[in-house]
Amino acid sequence: MSQVIAEEPIEATAPEEDFVPELTAFTCIYCGDMAADTAGALRIQYPANVKFIKLPCTGKIDVRYILAAFEQGADGVYVVGCPIGNCHHVRGNERGWARVKRTKKILDEIGLGSERLEMFFMSGSQGETFANAAKEMLERMRRLGPSPLKGGSGR
Image (cartoon, rainbow, N blue to C red; front, side):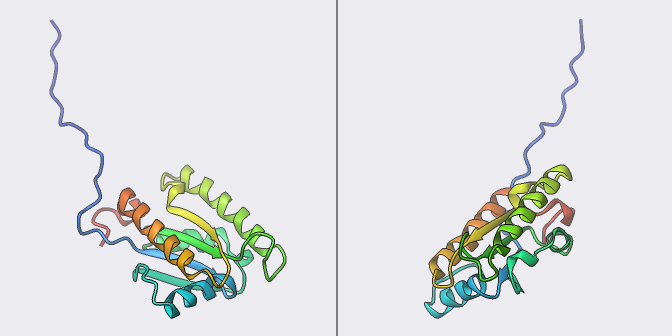
């Protein structure tokens, strides 16, 4: 006769009810930043808990910048650049996208998860698209819960 030892059930970590994700958005000074300005000018609501970091071009994004954002408390990070084929620096947004994809692989390898990082492409006139990207990231982070780097409460 074998003995069965009852163990505590392992539950998936559910996001806390009062958890407000911290987001970091890297934007190019052309389309990304202009889209944020357009959203504001049109009074389109988007999450207030987004920290903006302006870059001359998303082609200047670096894996180290993204990882540093997570180390400094971001639950999610996203990059906003010009539409593909319409970059003010010719192919900067494509270089940025390649770095974001590389960083997503690193995030999976270290256990943080690639879904905590995204890149969006839009023109400066797309304020609604900008707001929707911020809302999408906020909802995604609420679903995922606080960053594992925060070691607990996420506050």
